Length: 237
Length: 379
Image (cartoon, rainbow over all chains, first blue to last red; front, top):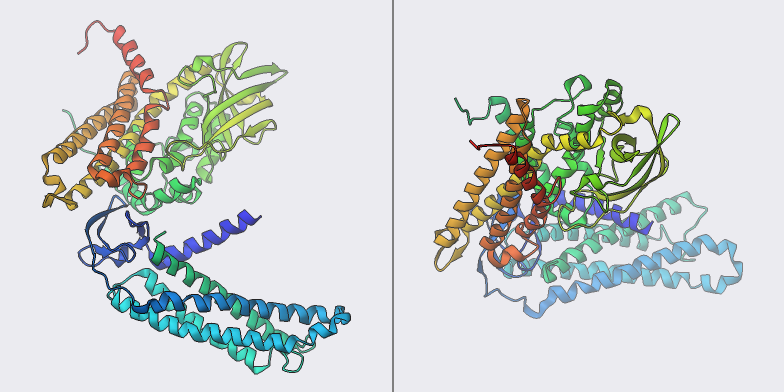
């Protein structure tokens, strides 16, 4: 069953990639998957990872990359802000999701386990901690975003790469989703400020909780994709 | 007068196959080679565009392409990926015995449905102890009342996992007899996909027959006529196999040429080095020679003439040319020819099987010599 889920996820990811990247080929040196459409008018493309200058052509539908040069003097990102900063949102976000999940679980099981009242009394603290984690994750992703744009401008000379385009689009989506999740969480419409739990008797609270979970899940997919694509720009494949 | 041009219809067919190859096969060749997945999605599209079951007669819903037309299409498809092309075309090998020796009822039951929806069939003759020497087949068919009961093991059966029925050769009272066996018959066990050197997209499996009941209505031809049917099939299919090999040669040539025209060494284009340019000249010449042999074998068959010798010549020569072209392609690409990120190494792996399946190169030479021995003079 796990293999089936993996296959399904791979299929969805493959379809998305083929829509976003179009026809691709692998850099013969670092194995990074590159989009043919990123080549310039002379069919040339500089690999963002290893810096080889590739002349890419299609022959009978086969991509035939030819390495012509190597771009040796590439500006290094100063202080490496982007690679360092990128790990903070990625590291904090899963804990914010976990906190929200625990609060929802606690809201469901609280009526069934009255003996654990002292534990449930700490729910407002967990709700606040979750909000802080979420705010830090989304807030620091602004730094990641800005430093990433700077690196693109310096190191990659603003060249067109599908990976970077995808990272920019997904970063904006993550910021929007994150802001929505923070607003929902902070408004008290999902988790009651007094109990820290979802009011299961209120249809509005239930709907808001469902919305927050959906937003967080979507954000999770987005940030995981950002991390994966970012990783390929460091390691190739 | 001798005519080398393709007719307008043939030219149109080639262009259609080329467009299909460029859009559907080549871009996905690497992916299917790496995963070993069966290219069902591509087969579905091939079926839609009419590239599957080209041999089926018109009265049973087919297009009834001439063998030469089929060769032209196969060359194009195999230029994209011979593994995927094999998955698309393997039906032909099992369909032809039915076309050749089947009754009208058998053709209606087994051929006609294949032109209505996407279905597969497989040619199950090879056994672990009987490859090139088909006479060694040991699978038994015992007559029980009106039925036959089959027992035995078939090996390297292309499209074996996905087939709806099999063409099976078995021994009935020590006489080789052919059967059409529905794949859902109780007692058929399909083995796992074999991991072969090349053509990873092609599905090759072991089939075990354990007391498999086959109705007498599914026997092809007479008892003892199976060997002839199985062998006669090859006169029809070998030009197609040779075309597949030509497709590999064409892919190798195109890739090597494109690379040599763009890569620079010693301050000039790679193609400006005589050692490399001569390789390309040899590749294109060998490809042309292999093509002409292939087209001649197909043309003879389409005229209703005996083509056994020409089909054997085309098959062994084209297979050797494909192997040589793939190796030369890798040589032109240098170190890049040895990496899995470039298409050359896949061509080498894919080409090898052409020297082996549907009669190894040595068998083809035996056929040619057999024909020569009956001739006083060769003209």
